[in-house]
Image 1 (cartoon, rainbow, N blue to C red):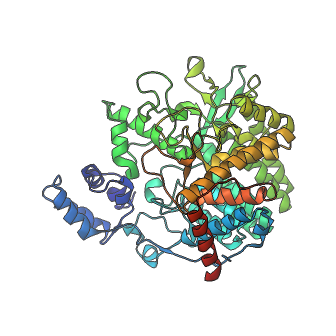
Image 2 (tube, rainbow, N blue to C red; image 1 turned 30 degrees about the vertical axis):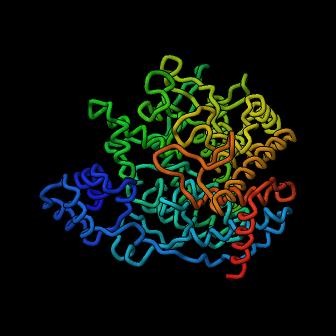
Image 3 (cartoon, rainbow, N blue to C red; image 1 turned 90 degrees about the vertical axis):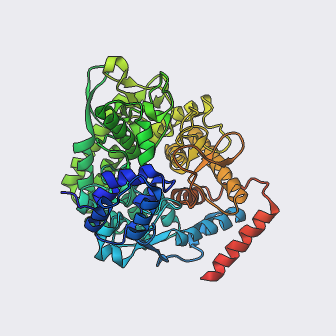
Length: 561
């Protein structure tokens, strides 16, 4: 049975009235507020509000029983933060090295920990309590997020902040103990969905940097438990064109309600549906897209009809995504390595066999031997039996990134790099777009995102093929240049998404304004600056006032510690 706080912040009449009133322009603002009284008291007080359509009465009610977002968390100083990590000396270009120090300083601004009140009165907050400090994305994203954390951790490891990284991994361990999986983010209204399951990969990154076997011993049961959640709840038996039965996986969630944090947006998206079943279908497709992390883009939309390129045509559960299969496949390989490290050869072999099976199924289902590229599967094709959808998304390269290539990896890397070149994808001036379809959604052209660019760059680089590595470097240089230019244009700000074609700039589209901070952008830039530290060259020009501000801020940063 759910606690009464869910009847306030997750679903029910109170949430419906407050969100529809539009007292707060951002739907997320209300559900991040805290209660000044116990949930039962608040629900009774709401029942006694005489005119629930009167904004003044609602405003009085909210001010009496709720406090603004933010009281659940406090800023913190990471215990392992130092002004100048030694690793940054590998960055040859002095401008980029100084930029890295500046970005490194942002970890202090994005560090949060739970207040004591959340621990003593958890039922007054929507925040999911965790024991250790963590890094948030920034802006309206005041809590931790699952797949954001993967790239944030990469940046923390570059910054040599191993204790902070370990603590964030342990936070997720406590969450798996509680829920059996890692929710989308650190709020109770995210508990009905996850995000791309990258925790096993994060533990691998951490172990490679520290050789901390104690973390492996602690985390292995949790990692096993999480993977079982995905196999049990997101599995799909698929028969390919050759009649072969394959075990695949989907981002797939069922829900009866609009998202609490995007309530009015979801009501609008389902407004053309005239049955409750139709509305629930739309909301389930929306939440499934949120589980993928790609919320939203044409990857999940119907390609024909009047609703083309809008959320109203969303059909996430009719798409079988290549990236999820690659993540699960790569996770099995990593678990096998972990058991080898700990001397358990039997379990290492068990996971090696699972890895091989998932890799074979991935190849058979998603690899297009003509285009030399992996593609998602559209279950509405082939008379409802499903077929590959020959459309490019950066996630197509996930098998290369997660080391789930069945055949010669170098050869495949070269083939994939040629695909990017021949289709003009790698020639975008400031990185890889989230799709080649232009739309008003944030995960489409002309927007590019840090995780997608990192996935493409690193996948090509680690393939071992010289041509693929050349393309990887070109994309890395372009992406870094774009973020660099915007950094100066906006006086030292880092954003969640960027414009990668035409003139450089911040990204747009979607349900909210572009956010600044920004956790995974910081992590990816630091990782790439270190990876290509001896090769990258700064591209100008930039405003004199901006570079002056930049140096001033960095010098101030060094003098603080």
